[in-house]
Image (cartoon, rainbow, N blue to C red; front, side):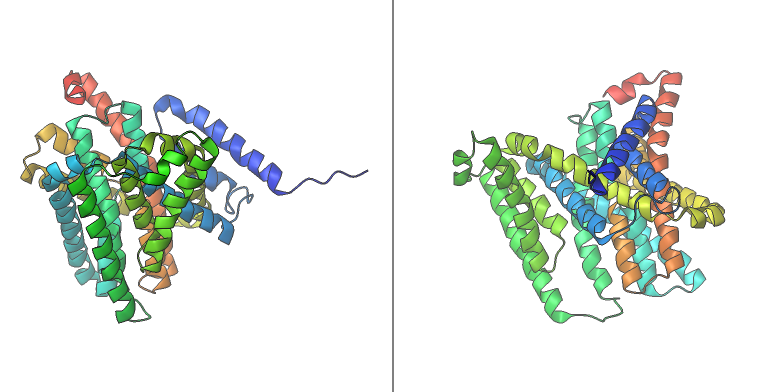
Length: 394
C-alpha cells in the first residue's frame, strides 16, 4: 500500500521551519520579521537551494499580501491626527519626492537618461517600507508618541502618493498614453476623495450589517475579507491599485470603530500573505548578479541612504520638527520600500529600464531593507553611550 504525499506539504513545512529558525537567530538583535522573510526567500530561492520558484501563484499571493498590508494600515491610522499634522505628512512627503526626482534629473542629465527613467528612479528612492518601519515601531512600543505619529502620517501619505506615481509613469509607457484609462483613474480618485471627506466630516460612521456578525466569529472573517478585497476590486476596476482600495476599506472600518474584531479575524491571513510577499522578493534576488555587481550595488545603496537622510532631515527641519526627531525620522525613512518593487516591475514592463537596471534596483531595495534595522539599532546604541536616553523616551 503506497502513501500519497502532496508535494506542497513538505514545501510548506520547510518554509515554516526556515522562518522559525532564522527568526530565532535574528530576534535577539531586534531584526524585523520582514527581513527574516526576505532571507528565507533568498536561501530557498532558485539561486541558492532552488526549492522555491517565482511562480504566478506566488506572485498573486504576494499581491494579496500588499493589499492586506494597506488594509491594516488604514485601520491603524487616525484621520483626525493625520489632518491636524498635515504639514509634516503631506508637505514633507511631497517635498521629499520632488527633491528626489530633482536629484535624479541632475544625475540623469549627466548620464543622458530618458525622462521616464529619471522620474521612475526618483520615485523609487523616495518611498520607504511601511512594513519594516511598523515592525520597528512595534518593537519600540512608542506608536502613540508625537514622533511616531509623524512617521505613521508620512508612511500613509507615501502609500497614497504611490498611486499618482503609477499614473504619471503611465505617460511614459511604451504602450503610449491611454486617455480612457486616465479619465477612469481621475474619476476613481475623486470618488475616493469624496468618501474620505464624508468620513472626516461624520467622524464616526455606522455599518448596519456589522451588528449581525458582531458575535459570530465565522461571519466576521468573511465580512472582513469581503470588505478588504471588495474595495480593492472596485479600485482595480477604476484603473487604480488594489492596495489603495484596501487602504480606504481600512479607514472605513476604523471610522466605524470596528477595527478590533476585524483585525483579530484577519490577523492570521495578514501574517501569512505578508510573509509570502517578502519571501517572493527574496526569491527573485539573483545572487550571482549581486556577487558580480556588489560594488556598484553597495555604492548606489549607500548613496540612496545618504540622499534620503539629508533630504528627510532638511525637509523636517524646514517644517519646524526638532533636530533629534528630524534625524531619527529621516534615518527610519532612509531605506527604499516595498512599493518601489512595484514601480521597478512597472518600469521594466514598460521598457523604461533594462533587465540589468531592474536587477540592480531590486538588489538595492533588498539591501537597503536588510541594512535599515541595523542602522536604527546602531543609532540607539550610540545615543545610550552618550547618555541621551531621554531623546528616545519623549
